[in-house]
Image (tube, rainbow, N blue to C red; front, side, top):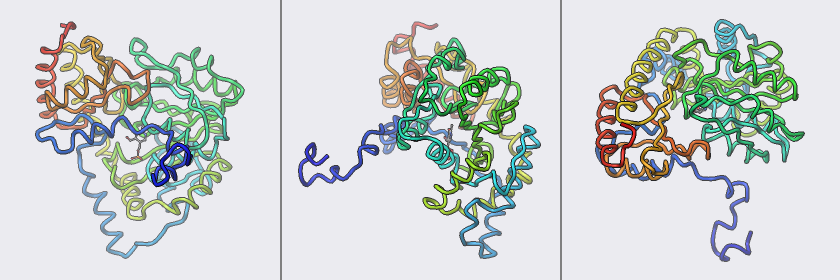
Length: 399
Ligand code: PLP
């Protein structure tokens, strides 16, 4: 690499893998946003709620007892047992807390571990797109090849099984799924998940299922990939606390997988992370044991906001597929004739509303923007007023 950089340019030390991953399309907007006043941000994908008090208190009490040390590499057994109980109660899927559950630093780390522990150089990881911004880089950093399966608004951004199957080659090793979906809000029914599971079984693919938004499902039941017949043995189930319990800053999540896969993930984890934050793990135990009422409270609040934003976006002339999960609306901005980047930048500068361009989630996201509705109803209403004025000015042909 020295030949492409001037001799004293520190970039010459940056590896090709790190160099080649694209910077997050979201970060550019945060950079633009910083320093602007009065902006309403529908940009960041995190709950506006503070972590419920009993959960915070559990961590404070743990710190008061001086519990400031590493935990087992696997995470606290008590927490792994609580995760196992929770998954069995919700989806009927059973994991051994001693050998099949690993406590991670959020689903972010769980995803990285799952991909790194199961992808050989050149292996292909298939993933419906638009997709969460970390999926492609996780695969690229593991030396794998990310194979996007485009999804479309008229299909509710659900993958067509035939299009998935068409992309399976001899190099395919896994199918990476994220439902409920960030950024589209799409969910899969049990039958739709079953159709993908069928492809995984027939082509002997592993399924890496990011179910971080499982508890934020507004229509029908969440379809847990590992709970389908024959799937537990070929699935890595990733779950977390950030969204349902408003715990983004605690950095705790979990990965469940058959023992040999969990063991492989644990090996990478023990050398790179050691163990997830201890206070965060104590908070997570409390969340699973007594946080259920707050999960439901949060879900109902988001559902109200979801209706508010979808109705509002449609009223100002933006075609918006109905999101059934997570906390994102993904309206089309095609009627403005702008690219999603141009739209997001102009909306921020002219109207003081931050959204994320759909292109940040892969080419299939172009023509849309992601609006996170995990903000107060008042902010949603004000954002919609501002967006309405913006749409009046920018060739709104949809009304
Ligand atoms: N997966 C998806 C689909 C997400 O949207 C996010 C956060 O936005 C994460 C994983 C990361 O979650 P965590 O905070 O548990 O690392």
